[in-house]
Image (cartoon, rainbow, N blue to C red; front, side, top):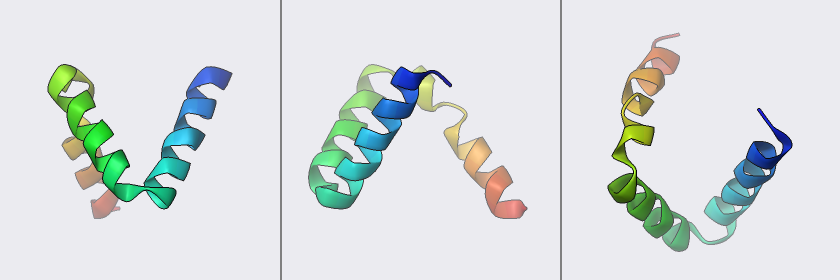
Amino acid sequence: MSNLDDSIGKILLELQKDDPDTFAKLMKKAQEENPELFDDTDIENNNIEEE
């Protein structure tokens, strides 16, 4: 992961903690505009839960 990816991830984590409503809106819009980025998320989450 690049430094930019790390920085964006940290910003999103802070936003999720500090302003969950805005985070939810942002993620919903991102999923609507780029659904391909979220295709494998459910599969990955299920794999993590099974471990």
